[in-house]
Amino acid sequence: MKKCSVGICIFLLAMGFLGRYAVTISDAQPQVQEERNTLENQTIFTGSAAAETVILCSVYTFNEDKQTTLLYQTSEVVGASELYQLTVPLPVLGRQYVMLQIGEEETTYAYTRYRKQLATELQEYYLNVYQVLTEKR
Image (cartoon, rainbow, N blue to C red; front, side, top):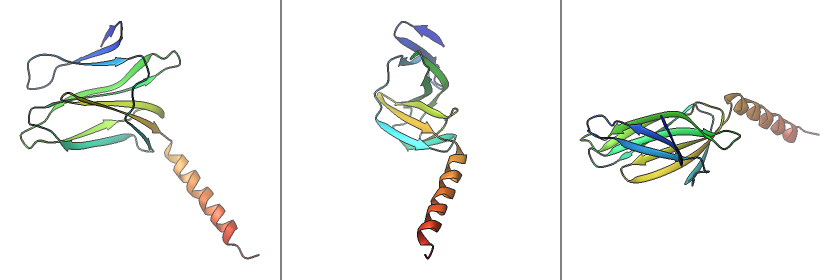
């Protein structure tokens, strides 16, 4: 990882290719294309792209000082089937960003990861409300 004046630059050597591919993550808040909420500790991206297309993925957060913290990075090359599946970890609770670059197209997703216990608590709350509403008076 190399610190740049505009943010963090991540240099990845894509397998099967000679040369470097760079993903730049600015310390400014990203332009988020889609917001997602989850209880899971990973997400899966699937799709199709031309053979030998490079896919770059970074997961990062912002700290209190608005500095970027890189949590995960990977690169893949699309094979002859022109299909890809990328399993991306969501390593922390709370808000984190997944930047996915497929060829020249870049998309940033904002994930808010909640505790799995929250789902159980909400389900129990729902059941309790249901019981109260359906009791005969």
